[in-house]
Length: 150
Length: 405
Ligand SMILES: Cc1ncc(COP(=O)(O)O)c(C=O)c1O
Image 1 (cartoon, rainbow over the protein chains, first blue to last red):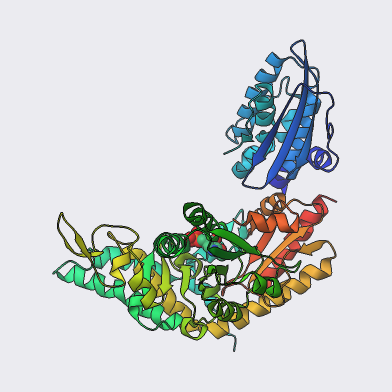
Image 2: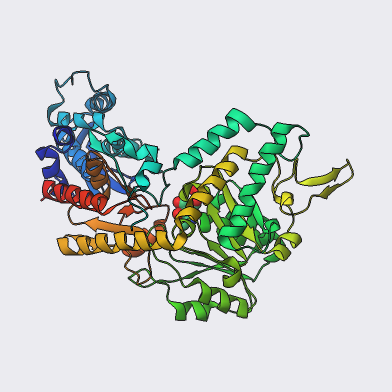
């Protein structure tokens, strides 16, 4: 069960059961839908951007523990960050969850996001962890479409 | 004696460990594992007989042709078709349905006509009919089901009328396990002049089917869900229907003579088998059919029913599992939700215990919507599963449940 615990750490179970920043954000400047057809995850993210900063953000939806926990932890981490910081964190998050299993996790500046590093060992679940980031990005770029993981 | 006691030895893949745990394979509705006889049939074809069929004068081609055509006779026997001209080899259930929708559909369905499907169809028995309706101006009607996942027959009756051209329903649902009352559906549909297509992708590996007794017009299946290889399947259709239907694809093997002015079509069933077919696949399919016959369809059904009953009792006694699909008449499929555990997480957790189940929408998104769930977990049984497999499944589910509570 050791490797399963690396995926379903207590922090992740906790965030999936009581997600932070969950619900509608009103007013908001940007929003978008994200959908992972493989497991039926549906996310909707709301963003309030002010002076190049993520003033506030939230999400709603239905998904597996990994996708909900990831969205919850992402929201906590990104509140107050600049758009540039968002881009940098997105890159590093993507690298972390797709890195080879034997590579150490570079955790400086990643904060709580590192609890999601365990998905590296579960290739079929990487999409779940990353869906919220793609959705947020498509909200920022005001793409009218739906963010997808496929 | 239990004829299934040593059966696991017939399936080499089942001997492996996954993450250090013995493999418990419960994803049989997605695809079944293959017995040695099927694997050997594929290998022997490529090792000894590899040649094109229906055209060689040499020994290899003759052997390949005999083995290929033998599968057609095996299918005639299994489903009690009237004759071998009624059996068309295709890529799978999906291609068979598309063939009927294109060939029969284009010729027989017009604006104002109606096609009825059920609320529990696999996407492959939805999309081709949606397209046919878009092409022709016909209307697609959906026969509803109740909360147990059973068709509401009185509502189905009310939908049938003189403009109903076709009723296309699943024989056994992959998402719910429901076995539909197909004899009644066929009889009532014929009474208004409609043809009936049964999607037998799930049914044929689990129960005896007699297409003549049913009087069904079209019956489709995929070999890979009945212990055979992927990429091959069957369309059964009554000879008179096939005779009248225009070809589906053009090419070699389906014509008798070709000139640049016109081509004359080959006889049935070759009119519908354009191009070099999946020869190895068809030969492997034949080995799978003989394997099924050797076990006996009634014995298979009995064995799987006892597993399903055992698993259903276990699920109900947990108090934290909601069964999705509780039809009185069902087989081999346990679709469910575990309180507090998303199916996708459940699938991952079970996998680490060596237990392979399916988590998702099972290519039946309208079914998920009906039950108000994004996805379900599904354990589906085959001849080689045992009560021990079911016990391992429920121990693993218990652990997953504990992890999230
Ligand atoms: C009920 C049903 N119909 C049709 C299909 C399609 O079969 P195939 O993908 O082999 O063509 C499936 C496969 O999942 C099925 O379960």
